[in-house]
Amino acid sequence: MSDTPKSVETEPDTPLAGMRLAEARRAQDISVLDIAKELHLDEPKIQALEENDFDALGAPVFAKGHLRKYAELVGVPMDDILADYYALTRSSGAPPVVGSPRNRERDFNLGRWLKVIVIVVLLGAAAAAAYWWYEHQAGEAAVQADAGVLAPFAATVESDLDASSGHELTLDPSASVGVRDTGEDSGAAFIEAALPEPVATDIVSAETSSTPSDVPQATLTMNFSGDCWTEVSDATGKRLYFDLGVAGRNVTVTGAAPLRALFGDSTNVRVVLNGEDYVIPAAMRSGRTARLTVNAP
Image (cartoon, rainbow, N blue to C red):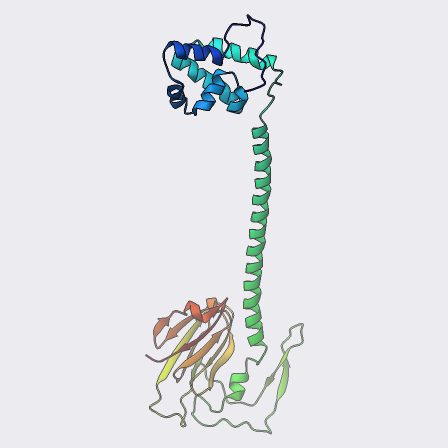
């Protein structure tokens, strides 16, 4: 039983609120179980309601809701029941409910979740920026590392044979070697050796008198749309091409299959193998750098 005082400014024997509902229920020969089923409550809760023990029903909003529905079931005016309820709760000294603690708690939780969302978004943006920087730097490092090993003229100097004549290339020790200023601020210079006139084509062949005729050959054509440091060698290890490809340059090499190629920036080169377009597989790419091995059909 609740300690809620039952004395109010009315006649002491007048039934109020739940007691009035209980009298109406008994007058209509309705059981407590039937009322409990209609209100979706258990019987002890109905008994507490009839005895004005509203604390057993939880928050005031639940008690008033059950009183309204109970009044509808037994045909008692709801206004009278609610007037009894307010008279009882005022006499008990219950403080008025101001504001909604649940709403304040929800506002606080919403702010906390907003902070969490902002932190997650910032962390995601930082991770994306770090990933982009890593991929960008890795691609540039691969191109710079390959480009710094040998000079663009290494393929010509190291070539054992003259591709145009098929004979061994011999340099005259007494030939004049001069240095010409390029006019650049860096003072870069290059060596002009007394070599035969270069062949006016970018076609390089690895076929020599020492290569067996039954070795399958492969022809690789590279169409450059931008800067791409490139190295191509054949199955014997002979370097067929080693230079910086630039936009508009087309290079064709032929050698013993399979051919091995390294492209510093594979996005700037179109590859044609034996007259057919060759798509570089994703497994052979690392960022912009690509290493591939191609065979003759």
